[in-house]
Length: 268
Image 1 (cartoon, rainbow, N blue to C red):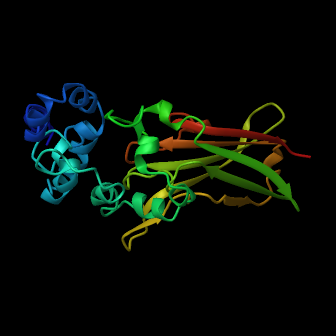
Image 2: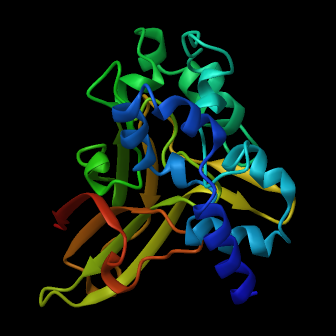
């Protein structure tokens, strides 16, 4: 299996999409910008190749990850054929892949406040605006800065954890492998962890197929914790973490993933 993955990396990485060759002669800056994006490598990353091998190399995966048979998405996949290209129909073009099985990104965007205010996918994901092709997403850690907040409140002995985010779609977005983790820790007066709870948000397979349990846009998501003072806890720490890789989980204290937000509260 490892040998097969290595062969696929070499083959796919060495096959630039035909559309890129066609476009690059006249649109070299745009082609070079796009070649550095995660979209351009959608079928050649180690993560994709591992998941694809686990899916027994299902050709349906390539419908989104490599429509033209190259290392990833190519110009023609979004712009269509012919020249001059017509304007890209956003978000419907995006929905071809980002509403594929295990995705709800565009569907959630269409009902969001951002969409109602006239924003498009490109306003956030296309760096520097029109004419540029430096698409950005969660694979760029800087893209996640200040995207979410977590707040703590105590009501009738229960800890209320409130999470909000500014993404124009559900969070984490992306495919079934990505997740947002809320890690809650009860700390003793000496800073020792005396209890911990973890809550995962994203797609989950409960045995009856994949279900979307992501954090919805424009509204707060709440978690209640009974008896936060148990086991002698004198304070509570909340960390909101982003996991890009399938199966990624926070270790003790919530380390190992990208931190989105953190809050602490001293218990009375």
